Image (cartoon, rainbow, N blue to C red; front, side):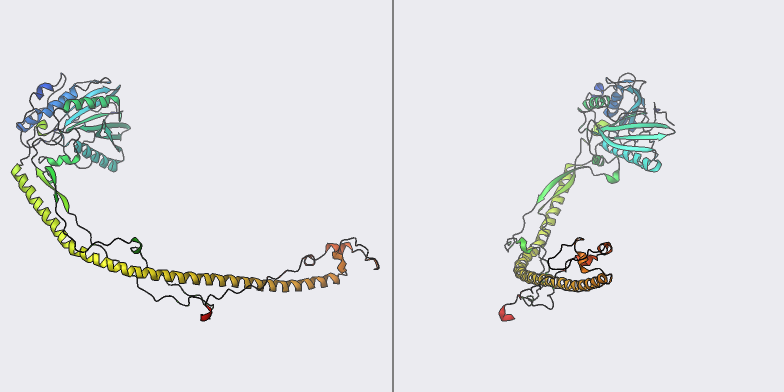
Length: 489
């Protein structure tokens, strides 16, 4: 288990590129001569010697030797090695290794960690970050003890990986500048800090005079035949091929949007048992089928072909001591001519097949517009009949509701009268005069005998129905008017 405060130097042999490159950047080694405390990579073969003595290896040594910024200081000399906390335990075990690497214990912003610098094959710097992220994500899926975040450092692609094991946590921030990757590994590595950005800017200043591209794309790795021969594409350029469209005989009619989205008309059912007008729907018509316009093929396209790549992607072939791929201008011109001719024939053939179909469509769409116009008139007629029938249906529905309400009122009043008579009979059976529904103290009427005051028992037992008004009956509803003209009745 690695302690959280310091990661031991992980020595890993770098994968070698094929062959040696005689290209030397003039006076560059003198400029980037490593400071005291840095070491050069061991050399065992001519190819390894070429890598170790390349401008890129010298630059990596200078980077690790000049790690000092205002907020950082070294804790030990730099040594060859690669700071890879994953150690290729997850994901693609055949992932590319750095050509050379150096690491150095440092203190940055008061925190102990290990700084790493690695030189990758030409154009592979950004892809190396992507591969590292994929391996970290594989570890995260397998163990659940790894977490991964993608981010940028001073505008360069980066990945932050945390590993938890045995109660300790190790974090690694890894990012690329050209064909060089940088890393900081330890127990408390910031995702972004002024010291990290300052170190990155110093590296940009160091590499900019000799690197063609400090931010290569992942796809730039495919420009090298020495990495993955099966995926090799080389440097690709594109040219535009354009042909003339064939003349179309038939003119294009003006678009009539109101006829393009017609739908089948629903024919309604007529109301039953009541007079209606119109008496029937117009004769049924079939919705015309809109002809589909043939897709117009392109009259231009771009063709891609490989061109000579003497400089190389990223920091270039000379930076990593890698031979440039062989590609002559004659082969490039031949491929370009062949591809342009093939594209021209393909475009012309597609347009030649399309032209008669387009002519036919232009005739068909005119016929469709005529049929669609007729159908649109038919749809409007059906809509008018449907609205008239719906109005008649609603009028009669309302009339039947009023008739039913009046019949219910008649039945209710008849029932009320029966209950009223029963209440009177019960009242009189109790020997309560009908006058007991009057006030307790009756007013004397001149010329008539005084009415006896009702007893308290009668007053307390007055039936409710005797105090209510006889329910009324709504008037007879008027039948809906006959919509038919007199001549059709």
